[in-house]
Length: 100
Image (cartoon, rainbow, N blue to C red; front, side):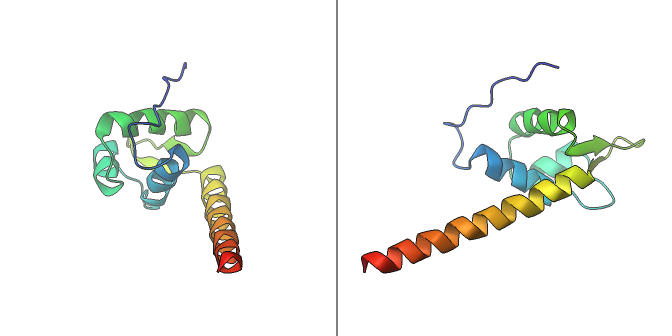
């Protein structure tokens, strides 16, 4: 499936932050798209494009009941992304201290 471009300029969050919001708001028992849009505080159309991307990339899956679930690959991505954010924050704090 061809992906529609996801405009970054319309959002205050980066694409990766939106992906994190989606993945981190999917409970283990699964969730419907409408509820996910509300939990992740995203417009449904925007969320739907990201969900399609995440399904295509294997980070999300649809179960037999039509509920979204995070795959093992999605969990690994989420863990690594959170670690990367911690590293960047620590480096920014260290750099800020040097300039004081």
